Amino acid sequence: MQNLVSCVIGTDYPSPIVDHEVAARRARERVWAVRRGDAFRSEARAILIRHGSRKQSSVPRRGRSSRPVAPQATHDGAPVTNSPQLTLDLNGGDS
Image (cartoon, rainbow, N blue to C red; front, top):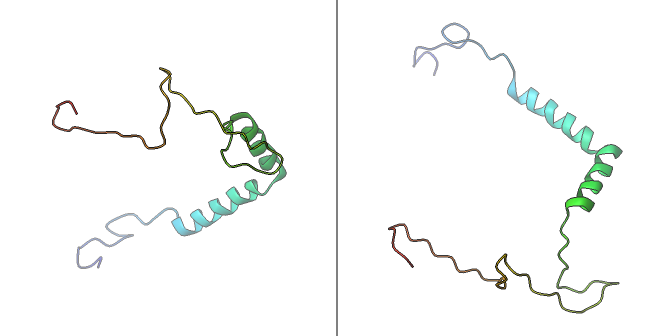
């Protein structure tokens, strides 16, 4: 193929500096080595505690009361529906 297009890698075009398969494999190994560590797990737990969802599930679980969850409201006080209806008019008209 290189002769067909008159561009030989290493002669007409520089050879690759990095073997991307080897580099990607090493990077994955390093990432997973960090993720398997205790420091990563404790940090992940801390992030989940701080930023995790505070919304109560509507499905009762063991140890929770089975009372219904109050519906959420938007910033203007209108209730949020489970099936949002959004229309998009690309012609500039009102819909």
